[in-house]
Structure formats: structure tokens, C-alpha cells
Image 1 (spheres, helix red, strand yellow):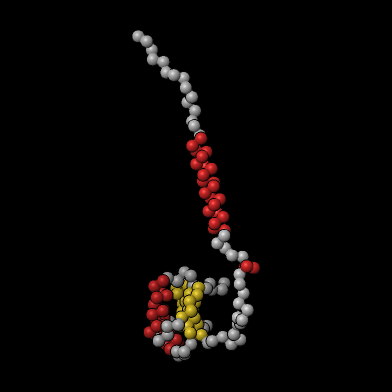
Image 2 (image 1 turned 30 degrees about the vertical axis):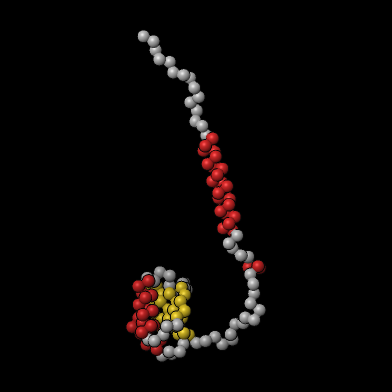
Length: 136
């Protein structure tokens, strides 16, 4: 009986397709990086409003702050600590003032909604919203 002899061939891997894919990925990321960097405008190239000015006496605002502390959330009217139930009363004292609502980033959305609801129930719909970090 004759033994079957296998052809001795080239058993090494063909890396050409992998190299092609790598080069295509490099070209792709170079094009994307160029387009992303073109989105940003340098500050020197931005237009300047020549007639703009900062008012010397800014309008009065009712400042409501919500801070996240180890003891829980605390509400402030200016620097005076208040409860959520008192937010509407404080806003209602000056109904023509805008409300500036400052919220610590860790305060939940539900608490912010309850506060906005209390502000709205007091008759104020003009609210400026910002986040802030308590000092210390």
C-alpha cells in the first residue's frame, strides 16, 4: 500500500488583507480627526458685539439654592436656610423678580422638579437654572 504524501506548501499566514485593513483604519481616523477639529472656532476668530455692555445695576433676582450635604439636601433662599415648602412663599414675596435656581450636581432630578413645581405654583415662570458646587 502506498502512503499518501502531502504537498509541501507555504503554511505561513497571509498578512496582506490585515495590513490593508489597518491602513484603511488609519486613513479613516485621520479624516475624522480633521473634520472634528474643524468644528471648533478659535476665540480670536469669533465676532465681537461692539455695542454690548454689562448693566451696572443687574435686575433683582430671587436666589434659591439646593445643596447636597452629608445630612441630605438643604434649601436656601439667599443665605437663609429654608424648607421645600417655603420655596413658593419666598418666590411669592417678589413676584416681578426672576428666579435664579442653583442646584448642586448631585441633587436628583425629582427634587429639582419639586422645586420648579413650587416656583411655578407661586406664579413665577421665569427661572434661570445653574449648577454649583458648595465651597469647601
